[in-house]
Length: 454
Image (tube, rainbow, N blue to C red; front, side):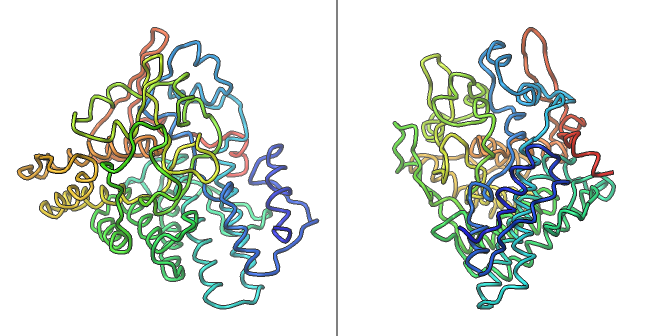
């Protein structure tokens, strides 16, 4: 990778540890990419590109910290405060990875997009690279807006403050916060173009690379959050028409902490959380020394459900922990956060239920559940009316998408739809509560970044 931007590795990433991310001026002593292969290598740097944030994972209600002593011993104030939904989670800490690392991803994508026009090469390959870069930028922006901005509300999205939209790698260009609506419009614009450019229809061998199926999966998720259920269902169906494989849990080894293998068939696009806060957001038996899976979540599974055997194990202290997930490219201590077929089936099933297509919704849901229960199991969904069917899909989302960094946005989403939730934690003799329409359900932009945004 000798020809890859030194700027990307040294000039920006290292100096960003000392300065605010959006104001970093990289070194002019760089080696510029000369070929399309160089640009591909930038996008294939999965340790940097294929990541998503961790704060949503820490704040969710999927787990509990084992004791006040363990909580007190956590290295980071952000980690402690996010667990208790404090209004100021950072307490002066800077270099928040959910912000820095995701804007690093956008910087990489923009660098490739900026360089493409000056490099000659085969047109189809150039189109593929441009499509991949657009998808990567959209994916990172979607993560940022869901962490640092209010959840999409059709009544207020035009005035709610989102995050800066960076469309160039030029560090001298400064961007103010866009509205939530503008952020979503940019995400959709990038994905619409990416769908036309990326040639791979189904997930390639390297599932860290996006495909058309991945583009449509993300579009379905974007419109799902916007409560446009017609479009969300359409894109989910398009994705599944290209790629619909679901692992049959009846075929998995459940007596191991690593039931899934690398490049698991369910994965449409692979990302993992940024490498931070392992004790409260990692996977594997080590985390059982610090946290336990929420006992109320464990109780939701029916006796015949295979998922608890696949997802969880119990340590010597009697606490459940999350087993290893879809095989990691870099480190199995960090959970899978990408796009997979099970989530797309659930998006399609819920959308169909909400628009009144109950029979097709039930059929879609059954296609997933039949891979999660022993053959011949009676699921009891035939006679469900619309309300009860929606509630059943919400329940299955809760049980299926565990530890995937979806729960926090899921709570905000169903709150926006009228399924009101108030989170509670009892800790050190105090009860902490969080209403999901409370401002505390949106993580503040780090203070050291705010001076550049107003």
